[in-house]
Image 1 (cartoon, rainbow, N blue to C red):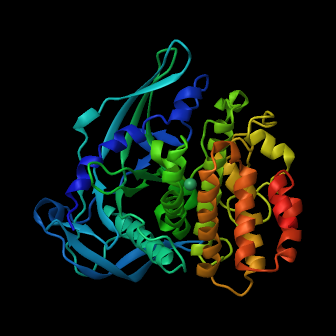
Image 2 (image 1 turned 135 degrees about the vertical axis):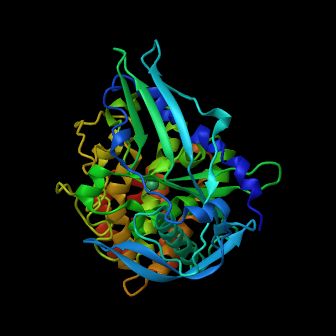
Length: 475
Ligand SMILES: [Zn+2]
């Protein structure tokens, strides 16, 4: 299969990874701290090719096994895995579902404040952006941990595993699109502060997903982006995010959500975040710059609901892909415990769940009471906070309904949910809220398992802010 159609589409990423719509609209006063998750350019742990001659004048060869590097919560170890590696376009490297991996991808942004106090980032790279496609010339598939080859093989392995998991779920919707990967993008931001000082930052310590549309009859595809690791992160956490199986499985959860929901959402004037910008696994850093109180229309509520449920969905999908194992996020800064669907409390001990106060904050009827910069603790003003609040209650709901089942059977509840969400979205944006979207999970679960009373009695008090979802449990 030819990868050429994808190459031109790569430049679309330029638009996506700039300042997202939301950040662009609302970020302003916090120029000195924004963007917090990006690091000074001197702190990045840049990996290099271990076999540069392969990229220069070699050709990829099919491989059957590869050495990947896996984080187990305590340490990262090499692991030999079966690997469906193949040659793409005569020279480049891909798997069955990942058409290639772009490396040496660079974008440069210049960010300033305009007169209205809004941050504005201009892409200085424009059409000059280039990339190489990774090649793999070693039949053994063995590369050292600190190489672009091992980084990419590891992320490709987990992505391919996520495709296999999806294909194993009974009743899945066929036609989920293939993907490409960007390994270690260099996204530079030159931030010019109001006093004239300049900060140079590079996006790091993150992973992201985008769903890019096809053009002129060419297919759309998923884009998985794995950012470089900072020295600080590596010294503290001892891992890279791509070594954590949950991370790519979470991103793939967005791919599944998009597969089911994107067209429906577009048809009523809503969009998925992954269609308008890169959707990252880490919580958004600019929490205090949110302007939720000005969001009042039902379309706003519907959009927030889709964004929040998308994140919760991705966490649940990642968790069930890991067969509901405990502590899949152990050792991962910002994610451990708080984003772990096996933990009933956040890292700081707050019980998970969505009561009236929390949903009022998320939907803009009430201000967040804290402006904490602790990325573990939700303020309920970010879509990732909906994942914190709902991940464990909904995971336990499904696990109670399917106590003996493996992850693949539990993930079926997620696909039935997505199908029911399609039907709800068809009814128009005035029907869509976090409440009604969660209600569809409960109604879908009732179609799979007749007796939901035990699971519902556990869930209801924990989602007391979601009235129609609670009512559905009482049916
Ligand atoms: Zn996400």
